[in-house]
Structure formats: C-alpha cells, structure tokens
Amino acid sequence: MRYTTIDYKKRVCRAMNFISRNIERDLSLEEIAETASFSMYHFHRIFKAVVGETVAGFTRRLRLELAANRLLAKQFDDITTIALNCGFSSSQNFAKAFRQHFGTTPSEYRKSKIGNRNSKKENALSLQTIYDSDNVFMNLLTNDRRTTMNAEVREMPEYNVAYVRKVGPYAKETCEPAFGELMQWAGPRNYMEPGKILAIYWDNPDVTPPEKCRFDACVIVPGGTDPEGQIYIQTISGGPYAVCHFEIKPDSFQQAWEEAFAWLCDSGYECNDKPCYELYHNNAAEHPEDKCIFDICIPLKCKI
Image (cartoon, rainbow, N blue to C red):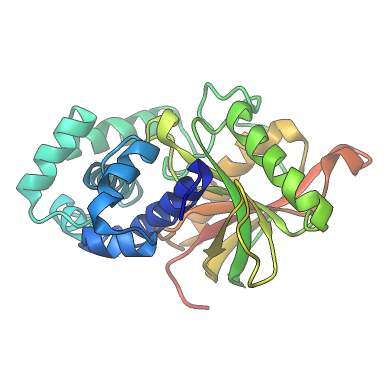
C-alpha cells in the first residue's frame, strides 16, 4: 500500500493529539506509534520528517510549556510539585531542562512573567492569552473598553469534528487558510452551519514559540465521518467549561479573550490543561452590524 503526504500528516496529527492529551504520563514510543497506525521501526523518522522535532523532543517541549503555564497560573504552588506533576522525574532534572529551553530558572521565569503582568495591571492570566501584542489579525483595544459578555459554567458535549491543522502564529496568515481549506470540503456537504464551526487553540503563545503554535479549524460532523484529503477527524472532549458568550465586532477578539480570563480569575474556578476553543454562532458578514456571535469555551477542573 502506498501513502500520500496527506496520509502521513493525518496520522502524525493523531500521534501529536495523543501525546498532548496524555502529556503527564510516561508514554512509550510503541504506544504512540500504535495510535498513529505506524510500525515502531519507521515511526520515529516519519514523525520528525512531518513535525520537525523528534517524538522525545516534542514531548519534552510540551511538558516544559505545560510546566511554564502552571508556574504562571498557580503562582503559589511549589515548583517541585509542578515539575513532578508534569512528568519530570525530579526537580533537578526539571530545573536543568527548563533553563536549557527558556534560558532562565523556573522561579526567575515565574517572577519575571508575573511581575510584568502586575506592573501592566493586566486583568487576565497569561495562561491561554490567545493573541499576542504583535498580532496583525486583531487590533488591540485599550483596557478601559469593555465588550458585552455573558458567562456561565456549563457541561459541554463531546464533539466529533473534521479539522484542518496549521502550525504558526495565531494570526490571519495561519487561521484564514485553515478555514478556507475546511470550507472547500465542508461547504458542499452542508456542514458549515452556525453553531457547528469551531477553532481550537492548542498552545499559549506567551510560552510556545509562535511558529510552533497549533491551530485547528473545525466543523462538527456526524459520527462515522471518514477523513478525506487534508481533512482529519478528531474528538473534542466534553465536560465542564466556562462558556463566555460575546457579540462583538471582529476587532474586539483580543479584548474578549482578556475579559473571559478575567472572569475566570474572579470566578474561583480553575482551568485544566485541555485546549480552549471558540464556537461560532453566525456569519458576521450576514449580521446587520457585522458582529461576530461566538463563545469562548475554557475547560475547567470541576464537577457540575
């Protein structure tokens, strides 16, 4: 059997997702390869050819970025505990790997990031700040400008989605091509309906290098839908989410994300390590005021 480049990318994406969702576990290469339906013999080389990193390097980077996010989100938690909970065997191994990756110690990293945030009087946690200050996709707004937001904690369903993945900065140049390719496939099948279109942000660009950030343009599809071409299939896990509802102009997305996490900080809930997503309810071009109606969905560590 012969495989195309798209076949390889599709299966490697499955492996990447599996690693992300089990990042705290000590995964064997055999287990990861089996998830992607590859033999162990060639999997390591195929993964590096597609991703640009070895399996071990990719896993180590995700663990370090998870730890960095937790250092910022849980500023009073013990660093050793964070290290062990992120899959590192000891605080010494963690400190060495962290310094090699970020160029500073975990404690210095925490102090500098939180200090900068406090000095700027920012309202939201650095964790999962989706658009950075140089983002050409959205115009930054001043902190005294507020959107209209309704927020609640809701049990969200599990979604079966078709998706196109792009790796790069969370900006127009990355996101638009992903949705363009998705629409070419989903439009003729009448899948592109309001309330069924999502965007998944796997990484935090305050921690992950922008060129390595993963973005998925998604549409909800019936169970049993087969992948096709550049269209892959995955499941978005259900459970408790903070669902922050907005009706805003397209240039207010940055402010919306800041307000969503400001609300989370005040709510007393804690987000877990699954990716956030946006769920879209309309086509802004068809709105009389050109407004985007959508939810920012933040996964939580709680039971409803």
